Image (cartoon, rainbow, N blue to C red):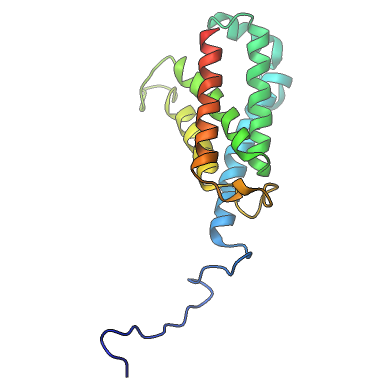
Length: 183
């Protein structure tokens, strides 16, 4: 019998135990799913802008749309956005250079939030602010938590996230967004 000050040894089964060091756990699988969802959505948006894939308008029409919003030259900013979305999204999905990929997504989504026609979290029409905000926060979360063991960053120090990768992604994304808005 154990005394009240001693804790009895409890057997931990495979469903509740944390994985052994180096083993893949539920958190790694969950992060993979989040990275794939956010990354592939962003890459798809970039492919729409650049190549007209997935029913997108392509670079020429996207450039005209950017020019109409005041981004001159429109084709340059459309290409910059498309490349940032495509490469940032693929980087997040693969877990490759995750803080940099997150910064690309954050920067683009900050700009999307700034030009949203309706700066409301719950607009009456299509989501104008909530969608880019959610994608930016998801990218920042991936940088903060790290891409996990199921990533191409598995051997890099930012695999497990932290304040430095999070701050890097937020600051670089914010600076990129501010530079584009200033131009």
